[in-house]
Each structure stands twice: as C-alpha cells, then as structure tokens.
Image (cartoon, rainbow, N blue to C red; front, side, top):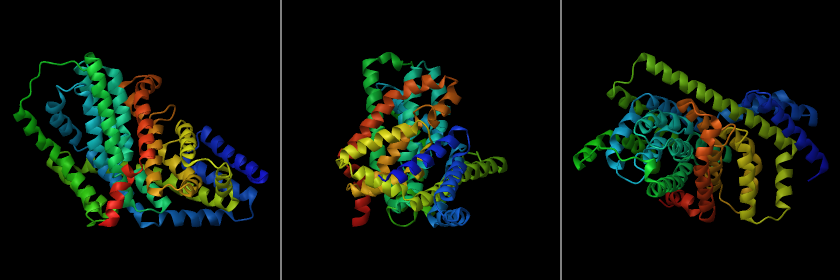
Length: 436
C-alpha cells in the first residue's frame, strides 16, 4: 500500500474511533469523519458531496420496507403473540431432554420470522420465558445463554432489517437475501436445540421435571395459538417466494396482518397504536442516520482511494479464499466488541465486498456470512445489544450474561464455518428462485 494512503487511512480510522470513543452518535461520527477526510485530504466540496450522497442513499425505494417491518415488529411486540407461542409450545416440550429451555430456541426462531430484529426478538421472548423458567427451577445460566444466542436469529431469519440494508448497499435482490437466510437460520436454530438436548441428557438437573401432565388433546388444542405466527410467516415470506409481492409489499401485508391479530387479541387501541408508531419512527430514524452517515463516509473514502488501496494490499498477500474469510472473521469479531451490527455492515462493506467477490465468493452468500458475524457482535461485550437486553430483564451483571452466552458464541462460529465450507446451504433457495 502507498505510504501516503496508508497514513491517510490511519488518520481517518483514528478519528472515527476517537469520535465513537467519546460517545458521539454513530451516524454523526460517520458524517464528521467523512467531512474531515474530504476537507483535509482532497479539494472536493464536503458539503455538496454530503448532500448528494445522502440523497443517493435514501431515495432508494427498497428502504420503504424498513419502517414497515419495524412497525410490524412493534405491533407484534405488544400484541400478545409471544404469550400465545409459550402456551402452545409448553405441552410439546415439557418432557423432552432440556425441557422448556428449548422454548427459547423455538420461540425465537418463530418470532424472528415475523419481527426482523434481534433485540426485539430477545426482549419479547425473554419477557415471557425467563420468568417462567425461573419459577419452574430451571438452570438460569443456560436459560440466559440460550436466549442470548437464539435472540440473534432475528437478524438471520427473514424478514431481517439488516438484510434489507445489506441488499441495498451490495446491490443484490432483497428477496434473494431473504431466501438465503432461511436454511442457515434453521441450521443455527437446530444446532442450538441439539446443544440444549445434549446438556439435558448429561445434566438432567438443569431442566427439572415437574408434576404437570399434558395429553395429546392439550398439545393439539395449543396449535391454534401458533396460528397467528404461522399465518404471518406464510403471508410475508410466502408472498415474496411465490413472486406475488415485493419485499416492500410483503412488509405492508405483514403490518396489516399484525394489526388484525392485535385487534383480535384486544391488544390494540389509540394509545398502543401511538406507541407502536413512535417506536417505529425512533428505530427507523436511528438506522437511517447510520446508513446516511455510512453512505457519505463510503463516498469520501472512495474519493480518497482508501477502499481500493486496502483491497489491493490484502489481495497482494495472495491469501487463499478460506484464509481470507478467517482473517475477515477475526476482524469482524473485534469490531463486534466495539460497534453495533448496522454500523459494522455499512462501514465495512465498501472494503470487504470487493475483496470477497474478487476471491470468488457470491455476494448473496457473503451477506449471510456477514450477518452471522453481526450476530456474534450481539453477544460480545462490551457493546452486545442482546446482553444488555437480558441484563435489563434479569438484573445480572453484563459479564455474567456474556459468560453464559459464550457456548452459543462458539456454536455460531461453528455454523459460520459450516456455511463457508458448504455455501449451497445459503444459495440453494435463491438459486431455486432464479430457476423458477
């Protein structure tokens, strides 16, 4: 790498971490670094480029799906669907090895398929399961750890908010990204469940068997409580996969369906509706500020030649494709200790994507790989959002929550290795869409 560009890169990234370290909002930090980079290292007008990059970022129609899916998640958060999931699954899981600890995995898997958010999935499921598991005498350590790990499925199982952002920035189909996340998401969920069953067989005391008895009639009767979740999954993902709706249209269908179920459950009134709308506005504003700042920073670094220089420097090392992915994985794990998932995606994509595609990897597959890396960041201190959510629910120290989540961190790394060695796990359904 040219010494001048190397020094410039160090200065730019140094300013970025300085602004983040002193507590400036992530989105504003990205704007500041992009502006200072152009001001000091080029003759280009920073103000004009900021305005044009922001407009170029937000004018994309695909971003309309983002607030719609956020609103759907907000409505579901307050609609009582999580309570229905718990009631429906208890008779099926009670006598299995690991017992109701499996509730965290299955509930998060199903709720992830209608919420799109990792933190929302963790909070919604955790509000119900943690208190009940404590009451029944289940091992609190694995209860917290399994919730932390399974909550990350909100990013991997579509409809995922971070998938929408990645697809737009990487210029790939949102629908294909959604399809790519299904099999890896189910694989990760299955690995989590297998781990809990294994622990339940080795240490039966982690899941005490109570006196409750459930008949097949109870199990079948509970299926009706699963209906709202399953219907929403079919409406949203089925409409995209069948080609009858775009992701944006499917998001609108999901909002309508969630609203109907909220009214049916008598969990919707003017006050709750206003809370849902304000929650959606705040979350979307936070995400879009980061996306706009990242768009400006990406343009600034592009003008300065930083991404191309870093990409070329790494390519000049002549690493094998798999060594490159291991190196990137280590970088992402470190970044995950410092930044939230959306920031990781938008800040690193301009540099990482050209390297990965030059190494022969599919950009849709890389999206799944990157989202798994983001999921790891959700359970790594000191900035792991899921850890903070669980800390808020349990009042446990953040270090203890992180320690209990560590086995699920390892399981996620193993899953990432599997989809790296067998990329068709992620690409099978998107390729099926192409062939239809």
